[in-house]
Length: 301
Image (cartoon, rainbow, N blue to C red):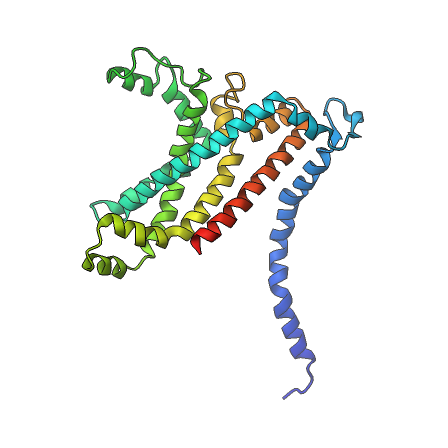
């Protein structure tokens, strides 16, 4: 029996260090591809940095932020971003909740239905955007053809070329793409609720609506909070569907703040102003998340 504590100490040290050593590659990659670009964007937002004028990298302080507040396109994009989030998230949530409640029932081919519901979520955003561009086409799109045959429309509507309908058409597209996320999350929450709760409620004479209100909703409240938070962040930052379908047009009709920042930085090569827009949007989104988490925490408790 060895009385020295040297080998024991080395083994304990190895056990303590090993988890950090295994996590270090992931931490380093995260720092390299997430946090470093964030710090770089914050630093560039304080400078006048236009790529075709590389020698004009001058410190301007909050000038870019002040210019954004006086920029009409900024406020147009901000209004569209609010509409984008406030319509897309509730629509995805309600459609996902209805789908989850349906998939939680017993019916033939239920496993197949649960598998097929993932398709909109699994498809690449570019594929979905191109598919819906074809659906919305004014000349040969199936949406106009269907509405014309049903006598709902008298003539075809250029859904993506009309400033009054373009943004809402893209919102419908993203709603179709994102509702399976809510459906899967809520379905997992529904299956965690003990069946005995519903049996006891039925014996007490509770209606289906009262069971839903007093058992189902409290049982999935934690899932709903998490799903809404994650989806809000993803939807708010989503630009790929908009960019492919309209490129932000017609005019500025489908501009959102992330897309406007992307256009200024990548198209106009004004990285200083584009970074300022990105930082402002990040701070707005962070404030929204903090308020949501506080209110959601009080509601759950």
